[in-house]
Each structure stands twice: as structure tokens, then as C-alpha cells.
Image 1 (spheres, rainbow, N blue to C red):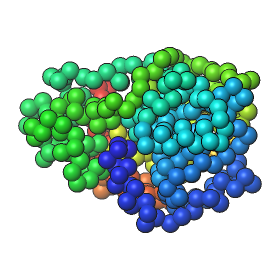
Image 2: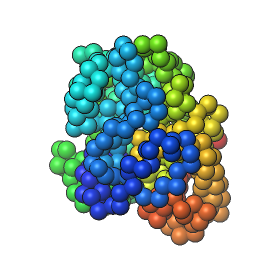
Image 3: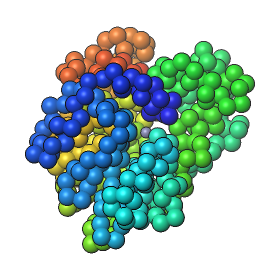
Image 4: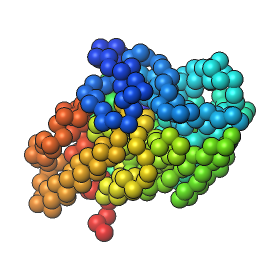
Length: 360
Ligand SMILES: [Zn+2]
């Protein structure tokens, strides 16, 4: 999600049913969650998950932190408004410095706002974060997926062409917001800026490649790279003592990936979920919605595998994107959060990924 979506969601959130507090009652952690509503209220909260692991949340965006005797490890400062509030809360509640900031990935609605911790913390991310945080040149070519939208082949995206992540699910005014030079079209650099850009994402100090661990105050946190999924720089953070993992965007218990799959990777995403299934944990603490269990990983894996197969078959049979959206109904998953909203976007997103990825 982008900051623009967050603003929209903040307004929507006030109308949603509240189920928040009960879910986190300590007796329920580790059980299967029968969560059927979006958690969006109260607007901000900090809740203990288990042991020294806590979750902080603003509306539908969350991160986690682990408290040790020698300081705090934060995962996903989120964006400046949240991190400023979090820093104040950590100071008041624990009086300990933040020593490490881990980015799940570098989209600016999760990795934003870390600067407030920069005086005490070391920042860590996957090595692909380095290139993702580089602003493309003004004349950089559109990505293959964006070229699908560029029906007049002029190398930039007009509002009439804007689809996928830039268009359909961004709401009124989004295009103008991204068109920072107000020339009526979006360049690769402007599209990049919508997700990675702005001055809000502080550059990491340390990059890791496959697996890393941090030890602080006698506690260990593991960083796992499980390959391409929602992004190419995604870290799963594991807390061994709490038997918990933190996941962002590519794995949300009981909710599909956000609408048009945000330019993710298929079929790699399925393999990434399979790798997560192999990790040792009981609780998933996600960056969006309610915590879940390993059963939710299996469900997401099955869903994405079936979606991938159905869209692949449809493309091979020469069907159009709209025909696929109308026919791939994924009814076995209709119980998950916001299914009606995400299912058509997921089909479109899978179509875009497969149509813009060279066949193996
Ligand atoms: Zn993301």
C-alpha cells in the first residue's frame, strides 16, 4: 500500500467493525484465529505478542519490536508519523535505545520513518534493497509490466493508461500525486517514487544475502531471505524464543495479497511461501491484519498455486485478461478478508506478471 492508500484507508477504517483487543488476549495466541473483520481501531496501539515481542500498529499498518536488556530491535518503522509516535512510546515505556532497525522490504509504507532512530540504531536489509532504493534515471525505460499499460508506446504512462498499482486501486487524485512534474504522464522514476521514493526511507547500514542473525542483550533475531515474492528484497524475521515470525505484504494470514499483486513475482512467490512453511514457528505476526498460524501459510500457498495454474492455463488458451477475471473465481477462498476486492485484482496482477515475464 502507498501513503495515498493509507489516507484513504484511514477514512474507511473508522467505519469498520472493531474486533481488535480480544484477538490479542494472551490465551488466544497460538490458536487458530477466526478473524473475519479488518482490525483498524483503535487507530494506534502497542500489544504484547509473547515474551519480549510486541506489535505496534497504526490503522492497518503494523510493525514489531523486541525488547532486550541492551536495547530494542525494531522491524519496519513504517512511515514517519508512526515512527515518531513509536519512539516516544518506547522511551516512555522502556527507556531503552533502539539499537537495530530491520526492514522487511523497502516499500515506503513499511521502511519509511526510520530516521528518528538513526542516532542509536544500525539499519539492516536484504542486499536487493540497495538497488531498489536507487532512483531510476529520468529517462529510464518502463518495466516490462508497465510497458503492458503503455498502449501508445510513448515510454511513459498517461492517466488513461494507468492501471495496476498506479491506477485501479489507488483512488481519485492518485495520478496527479505521482506526477510530480505535472506533465500529464508518469515516467519510470515517478512510478518508482510512489513505492520506494521520498526522503522517508533511510538507507540501510548493513545488507545481508541469504540469512543473518542479530544478537542483542542475550537474545537472537533471525533474518531469512525466502526469495522473490511481493518484492525481491523481502525478509522474514524470526524470533526463536517467542516462536514467532514477522511477515509483510507477501504473507498476510486470512487475507489475499493486496489486489493487483504490486508487481510481484510468479511462480517464485509460491516457492517463497513453501520456504516459510519450513521455518520453525507457531505465530505469524503480519504487517497487516491479525496474527495467524502455520495453517494460514499453507492456505496462502495453496491459493497462490491454484491462481498461478489457472491464469497460466487461461493465457495458454488465448484468453484475455477480462475473460480470466470473469472466470477464475477461487471460491474456496471466499471466506478470507476482503475477498471480493482482492480476487479480481489478484487475477489481473497474475496476468500482468505472466504476460511480462519471459517464459522459462
Ligand atoms: Zn510492499
